Each structure stands twice: as structure tokens, then as C-alpha cells.
Length: 510
Image (cartoon, rainbow, N blue to C red; front, side, top):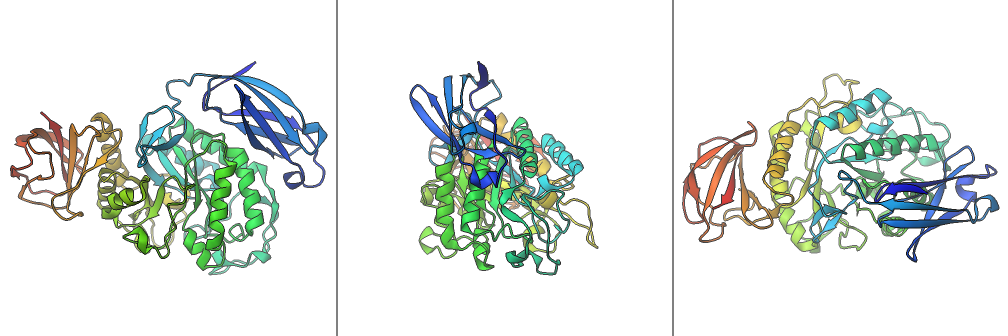
């Protein structure tokens, strides 16, 4: 009997008909059963007469499988396999824990330290390999990435593979990312298995690096018509990709990048997103994390929502937001009672757009402020040369990082890990919300007080618990230094600080 670890992928492969359009004409499901607990999942066509069914088992024991199909050669096929304990480095999928945080399925805590490389899997093999090598050198544990190619400034090359069968039929122009989909020669009823195999192979390589694939299912930046397939084709595409990828434990579903912009340019109307979101939730047997990402800046209060999606929907597991209003992170966590990940708080770089010309210090500063306020944060890098270079830009293509902020983000990641911050409890400050960022371990035995670019001569940390005394270490987030702080810290005692940017205090209760 075949054996696999819990949370690893089981795959049943079958031979079947190639007549007609197997992607749409053939119906295939399989029921997985353990101890009279059945789960039915969709199968998919992988080309060349090969059909597959995949499943991520979450219980130890013996499973049986039986297939169901509208063609006899795929119907009633049976199999069995045994699921064993997970190995030490297999923590399972990331899920919501305690309403407002994340943890792996085995209970290990998880704080999102993300990065963005939208179209890295459609780049030449060398760039894909460079991307994985860069990720291996850093501490990012999540990457935002697209299923489809991206058409936007600095994304002008055609991909080597396309997600559907067909061909290009249009002449590119200045506004080619919003062209009329009727001009395309792609057949949206026939996915290209080779394209999706490359995608899933890279997702598996990410898993081996301990990195979550925050997979963006739709995007407005498109010149091929993949953003204008219509609701019926959209749902069929989702059924296909969920059948292929739901068994990968490190997958997250991001319904869209900038969903509200897709409505503005006539691609996917706002009214369709509820059906799309419910469909993904219902079709996914592994119940991966699910979010939707905005273009317009979020409101300061959920009751003033105008263009922001209603994140109270039950199928939305966490908030994936685009905003540099990072002082509002604790407010959104409290109001929605869900985790908040600021997936786009401006990128380090020198691109001509305001969202992509932040300094390395600004990118680092955002990470400290978001993480210590209880959220997750995502990095991006957009360095270019003039005139436009064909060198890969990390945010768009992956490849290599040329900036400095990732080094400082690595420092923060290690600092938290080495001091027991497996998740951060956000704490209120005595001054304006944006002055300090303060977080503690869940038991409040350790605190980090981030002062940032402020340079006070003295500080009083009146938000600390009364009567508690703390020893302290002085940290410089940019210089990556940690030194002993020679003053005892209490909530009613002024402390003297050296006047320097990007300082923080690590407090330990005596």
C-alpha cells in the first residue's frame, strides 16, 4: 500500500478519452474516505489522455478512493493508501489561529513576512532559478504571485508559455492591457497543462523553502483577454486550478490583485466577486486561506466602505490590503476580528510611480510598524535604470534583489524568532498612534518598542503595566545592532535615549 505523510499530496493517475474537449466534456470526481468520513474532490485533465485526482489528507490512517465519471473508463476506479505522521519540517498549511493571527496546522505560529514577484513563473528558466535562489538567501515566508502573465509597465515581453491553447491575434498598443477580449485567439475552454505544470512545480519548490504561495487568481493587468473571459469561463478555470493545486499545502487563494480596478476597466464586475469567492471556498477541499486585494485606499472605518470589499464575508479568512495608512492596522484587526496583511504598503525602488519609489529605510520602517502592530507585511522592489532596462525587476519578474531593505527585514525576522515572538500582541501607545509601534509576546514578558525615525531625547513608556520593571536592549533597525541599555525601564520613569534614527527597545520583564 502506498504511504504518504499527513498534509502531503496524494495523486491518482488514470488513462482516458481524448475525444472532443476533455477539459469540459469529461466529468471526473473521486471520494476519499477514512473512518466513514468521505470527502469528494474534482479531478482534472492533464493532457495526452491523462486524468488526475489530487488530495491533501489531514488525518493519519488508511484511506480508500473511488472515482465517479460520465465515461466508463474513468468510473468506479478504486485505490487505497496510508497516511503517516508528518516529518519535523512538515507543519501543514497555514490557517487562521485565535481569530486575528496565523498558525500552521500543527500549531506552530506564523507571522507573514512576504515579498512580491508577480510574474516570476512565466519568465525564462534562468530567472525562475534566480528567483528561488534569492528567496533561499532571505527570510521571506510568503510570496505574492500571479497565475496569469502580467501586462503593465516594465512587463512588455511575451511569456514563453500561455495558460490556454490558442494564439495572439492583436497588435499591441499603448493601452493594450485593457484591450477588447474578442480580439484574442485563445480558447478559454482549453487550459494548457504544460503552463500549469510549470506553475505547480515552482509552488512545490517554494514549499521546500518553507514559503507560502499567495496565488493571485485574477489581475487587471492583461493584454491577452484572461481578465475578460466572462463568469462561466472564470468559474471553469477556477474549478481546474483548484483541482490541480488545492493539494499543495503552501497555497493561499488571493481572488484578485486590485479587484476594484477590474470593475472600473470593464473586466470583472464587482457583483461577480461574491459568487467567485463562494465558489473557491466550496470547491477547495483543503480550505486554504482566501482573500481579495484592493486598489483604492481603504476607509478608516468599515462602516464608511465605498470601494473597499466587505471583508466580513465568511469565506474571506483575512484582509489582504493595499495601504500606506499603516497606523490603522490595529483598528482593522479589532473591527474585523481577522488577521490583516498589508500586502502593498509601497515598494523600495526608483520607478516613476508613487507606490514604487520608497526608500530602503521607508520599506524597512513599514515592516517594523506593521509587524509590531499585529499585522503581516509584504516587501517589494522596483529598481530600474533610465532608459528602461530589460534587467528583471523583482516586483514584476523576480530574479535578484539589488536593494537594502530585505537585509533589514531579515534582521527583524531573526530578532522576533530569537526572542520568542512567534506572534505579536499589538499594544497601545501613550502618544499619537503613528509615533511608536509597540508589540509584546502573548504573555507580555517581552516587549519591543519601535521609535523609528523619531529622535526623542527622553521617552516615558506609560503604556507598560504598572509596577513592572524591565531590563532593556537598545536596537538599531538600520544598522542591525543590539546592545545593552544601561537604564531600568518602568511605566512611570523617564529614560534617556541617544539621538539616532530607527531605534527600538527590547524589554524583558525582571
